[in-house]
Image (cartoon, rainbow, N blue to C red; front, side, top):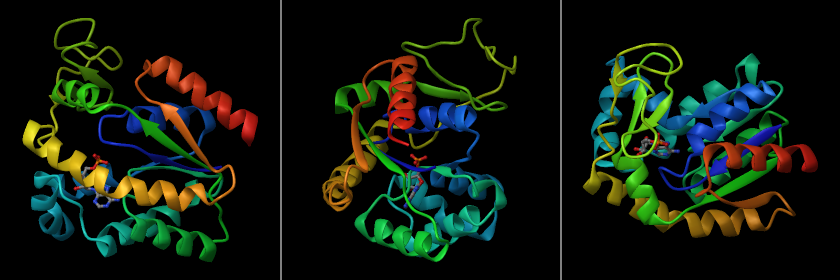
Length: 218
Ligand code: AMP
């Protein structure tokens, strides 16, 4: 089961990918997480991409593709994977097709998360996550039950993404808007593979819907 999640930042792709990854026991592959880890580890690659990440721009295809390729080849992807944040452009979709063909894999479903910009801004400006278990919260509408303590692992250390800043968010959204049309057109040509979903509904309802679609179609 090889899934792709398309959608703007803040549409819940990462949260849903994490829920579905646990449900179907296939890895969530987030290119954004992998790039952020490189920056945190102060690797050579991290140094190269750090400024791009901070500006909300897109990292060069060859860099992202290299880390994706390495990840997809790992054993835990043999039963499938969820791509969260890749492809982000038509050129990346073409590269993905090439690598899947080489690995004798096919895409099973592509979900397009649709949500309006006002909702996205509220979600991203309030977003924070547990540094330990990565559980995601929102200071406006989904706080921890106990102030400053993670509901799931009890950690008291939280992360705010530095690119969740209003001007950077607007840049990320602009870049998303520039490329999503071509990506949707590209995947629309694959019979029945592309499914649009209303990502404004609650986390629970959205995961129920995704699971229903997956189990019905696959
Ligand atoms: P995300 O966690 O998906 O919001 O990604 C965070 C940042 O990582 C983006 O704003 C980009 O700078 C970079 N990034 C993630 N995925 C890609 C990709 N497929 N292509 C280029 N840059 C990416």
